[in-house]
Image (cartoon, rainbow, N blue to C red):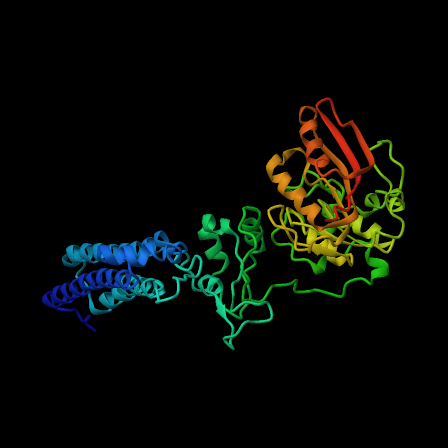
Length: 458
């Protein structure tokens, strides 16, 4: 059967018509952009500028004009690229001898998708209008992100009743880390999913975003994946010091594929976790005398404030062994953890303990003066910037109650930096119950301390 071919004059006419339509779209986009800027008050006469901008200066202070301009430029670039593609096609149409099916395929693959994308981008642009007696209000970052799910997330949610809610607000904003704007592509990949379907197996992408300051992450409306053969966890009477079942962890993103491998090696990316998955070695910590004076016994620490230590926080690198030992003394400890090279959060939870998935960047999610104890080991050490450490320590001081204990366990740094770090701990004027400095190597030293927060009643 002979192929149906479009006459050359018809092809030229069709391509010319498409170019005319595309050119018209560019003009329409430009006119609409100017109109929307004008309607928002960006192109006014001198007296109107004075009246609307300088008399209500604060109303425009939150409007992100640069993000809006970038979105308009993005639409125009898409249309310009599409026009160039059409012009190149017209120049090569004689050589292609294009049939009707090929021409249809070209339109479906090369023309319609970018045109649709430009159309959606244009519809997503939002420019708030200034109303008399009220300021200009724009949802933060609304014109910065292009993935619709992020835009829905950052849009303010008005109360259905239109009244003030139980929190005393008329609308609610979902939180997002300010550094997310520096990782736009990664965040849009993280938020690109089918609503109600299974999430991609990308927890490591979410963790990378958190570590780099995109924290807190936006919530997602997809279903978390779990191990296909997930079984019952061990009862609490057995789980504290027994290796969990390998089937309860998704191992595909780790070097080791079971807990036995982790117990025999050091997880990739974790220099401070040698043997922390070996629970037999972990059992002796804080309960047996050590050759180092910087190792405090747990019973000695608890006897400093008899029957007063009930709840606390362990900010360390580990698998929850400190919390396990404290549980044996009827003390509830929340353990912070990141899955850097190994399933630390899963390990802690499977032991019947409480993991808290946070980074050093995040403000602790506890109210002021609530914790009896904060313990830290292998976390800060000599790598941390002094100003960052200052913010961290003030946050710890905020959540620690008057009379609460700060247990600094084997903090180490270079000898030349010791005075700087000692000042960071001593600036709060805590009472010293224990304070020990000992040599770690020729260039480094250990510091362990047990400090009590003063009352500071005002």
